[in-house]
Image (tube, rainbow over all chains, first blue to last red; front, top):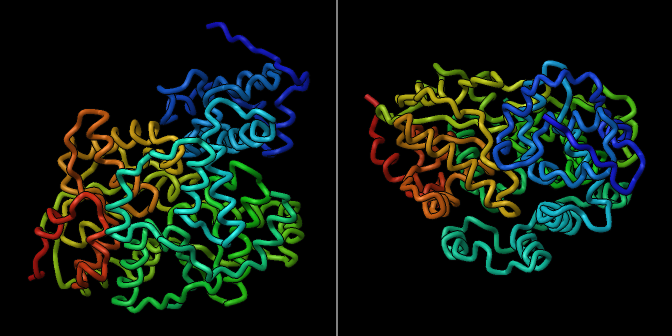
Length: 183
Length: 290
């Protein structure tokens, strides 16, 4: 099998950035591929987890952030759980997402990134998530107003979704956390 | 037995039934749970996707509050449970992280609060025998597959919940209720979790495989302990039927709802009507224990 590694715009090797953000050293990977064999989305992606690691070992540049797995990884942690070298692959994927989200144009499946921002904005505002506010913000960001509207009548009838935010959260720490992490 | 209880954001919205059933079961078994005052969001998946310090400080803020209450913490949501455990683990094992979090919160937290999932309390503190003694009803050989998902069991070094590949906690509870706990291979597969809204296509693929395996095993219902799993399997079931040309009609109930029914608690108080796929096939199996 041929592995093509593109460096991308940044000449820096991503492996150091991954280590810096996640604290995970991927150099001890044996390429046993247990992560790939257990990955639930492996049939849906072009770049499986073991290949991400191999590319990082072979000095991949920031083109690796375009790999489809970056935003399709479900953080199920099966990879980390089964890794014989105890490499926290889920944390590696987090590091790649964090780097991609900082780019001016985040990768193709950035709907997940938009969802994350919508989610965290309600946490910042109320101290807890507020589903309807989050859904509205997400839909506006993705121009997809009609998604899942068929589910709302039953959810509202069954009170399976809160209509109003809860104001019971003590926001003392929340304010500090968002300020200190500048999110 | 007294615990400070962290319900998590879903308890006020999509998983009210989980929250209600946990409080009812706790009351019936004399487990004293006191809601953590002013609790805030654990950050869930969006936080660890965004920033490591943010993802650890959000749960740590709640753990600090719990510490001030002097009680250990019981968590209902599998995702919150996971994030709390991860934060505690990092604080306990990494002095730099501990310092960073202290700086973010403006107060030091040393990782001293013990965090447990409600199921662990039931099995370890109450025990199967006391549960059996308390049951007034039986689910009479109802065929149940227990679905644990990702966040309770992984990573095992941190969550320390049961067995990471073949957990049996919920199966033991099902057997105690008089049900038939079916063995099946998808106990710890992923349902798509936090992709519920952003990547429903992935949720449909993964949840279809779980529902398909449950049906093949002969299950009459799936018992869950995670609000994300419940929503993905229940609320998306219709979409899965349509998109994948299936005919699933599997009730997705919280294990605490089943326990509540066996403790003689009313359906209303357990939020049974909140299930999208009708749980009637489960309720019809219920009868007074002999």
